[in-house]
Amino acid sequence: MTKKCNDFQFQPQSPSILWNHLEENGYYHFSNVFSPDQVRFAQSAMCKKLVHYQRMEHFIQEMIKFINQVFNWDAVFVKYRVSDHNNSSDAGAFHRDVLKYDSESLEPCFTVLTYLDSSCMEIIPKSHKYPHMTYGQALDQFRNNRLKVCLRKGDLLIFQSTLIHRGIFTENLPHRRLIQVFEVFPNQMLYNLFSPHLFHIPSSSTLHKVSPFLDWLYKYQLPSNILNYFGYFNAATGYGYKKKHRSQRTRLLYSNEGSRPRLVPKHKLKHKLRDQEKDQDFLEPGNHYVLEQDDTCSIPEDIKDELRWKQYERQFTSYGAMIFLVLLFLFFFFYILFFRSKKHESRRKRELYYI
Image 1 (cartoon, rainbow, N blue to C red):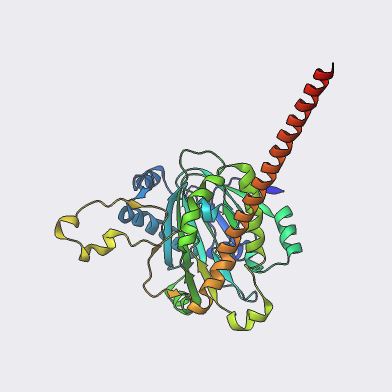
Image 2 (image 1 turned 120 degrees about the horizontal axis):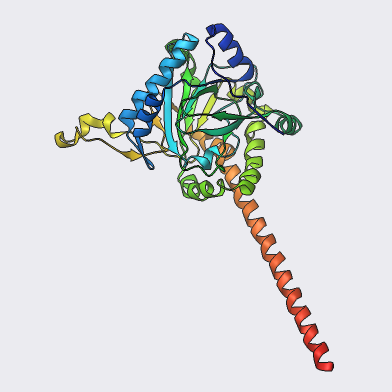
């Protein structure tokens, strides 16, 4: 059963109270953080599926500025993504933004997001404390602890990167503009401490190909719910976590970039552009990962394919197998229906003939 988060206005509280809530429950929802003018400014940086990244980065700095104020941080973040209805292929099912194998530590790594259109998402509070549940624990959390969080324009949500969550794409909205800032650390010192242990898994070309089809499926309630079960149990049980690997991978964090490629915005490449191009306003494809740090660690080659398979490709293979079985069932169902209809018609003709 899904519980619904009650709407509330953010009341100023001490950073320690906010931090305790964030550490215990894994998330905090701030309402009405940005004014209508600020929201309109961010919306103006998006045109259909295109993004003016230079303008959008000004708004992202406002998001980070707010987080710094309320938590007394000096935050550093690794990457961000801007989307409008086109991120469902890797966000429509329950998932974790960061995978970890060590359940004894709680790394200060967060995701911060703001919706530019009112929308909803689901989270599993406190799931950041349990990176690899048993199937029984996962089922219990799914049935009793799901929380639907409804965010209005200008709200801000921060949560632990290992918290299980998903977007809801079945609302048939004209827009679902979303800004996600990933791997946010409270300060440079903590970033320097944990970044050598944070490995990034770039998306594969195989996932790029199936992404549009999954975007379409997640618009409909029934396939969305069915696919979500696969995603949830994959994420809740730790993406193929095995005890025997724990000693090798303890304290390591993995950030999987799902089915979306990376992009370097053109305004960051102005030193490489011709003079006549430097003053242009660049609108570029949205729903790409934009890296802000130059020292990010790529996943070691010896385990890249294994982790990519466990985090996403295995899940998408399950989707394909399930769709194939459903189509096979429908084929036999209608074939038998047609066969029985023809058989009944043939019997009627014989009866009429003898009469």
